[in-house]
Length: 212
Image (cartoon, rainbow, N blue to C red; front, side, top):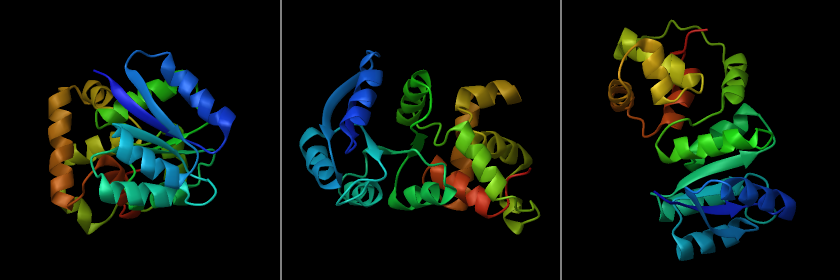
């Protein structure tokens, strides 16, 4: 399996650093680079990447607006927002624009590779560091009528997803199979009318479905 990646960052050293990290792994194919949102849109149309790593702050069309434009035209493309900030409002704004992931630039290189592979596989929408930050910001009581829509087991799965765990880790923690974890997540998203893990986690935090 080869993952075509488009790297978008207006800073040359940062962009080349990302390319260098990913180039060490045979699964990644660096399809191209872009320096701003407009170029990202043009390159996405031309290169048809599997995933775009999008810096959040760039001159002209920024990363969030570029994400919105690209997702409107190419909804299948997975986009991970790159940021030096763990501001939870940036995270929620990224969700609104359609991003599948949010990656802090200060993470270790090994984490980048695992995280991006997880995103392609439909997992790990946030880092554990960011999950902790969100938990601190959204300490909402769990008592909420929405919790009646999901089972006790589904709430357990949701809690672990919110901590940045992947499906395999959740399965090991709860002593269930990875496929069962996927089924639980699919059921939760269907019940709450959500489309992906990022939306699910944001919804859970904002509506008090997560226990603290």
